[in-house]
Amino acid sequence: MSYALILLAHGSSDPNWRAPFEHFAKALTERLSTPLRLAYMELSEPSLESTVAELAAAGVERAEILPLFFAAGRHLRRDVPGQVEALTAAHPSLELTLLSPVGEHPAFVEALAAVVAEQAGESARS
Image (cartoon, rainbow, N blue to C red; front, side):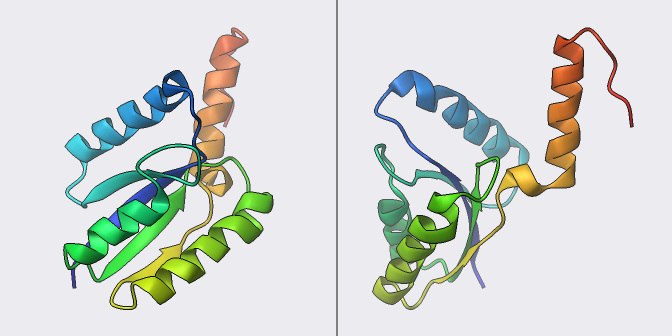
């Protein structure tokens, strides 16, 4: 079964806002063997809709969507699940799974704590 991972960012009309996400996705693409796509929920291209359509057209059978969000607010509780439901109906050959946002992962919390501690001039405590 062919698989892909979609990194989902919120989106912005400001290209400077998108640059860190594009850099991050490029670095991951070079590091991982898993096919990876960066998509935006709104305001930017490639959109989640165009990314899913591209993957479905390429014959991908399963894709997981990893939100690059700190927490599951309204967008991840209502908007994105609605998008995923519509995309599943539009592309029935592609199984889509929405994962928890990266901000809820313990490793993300530890990495962010280390950055904040470094900025504060302290070493991170475990």
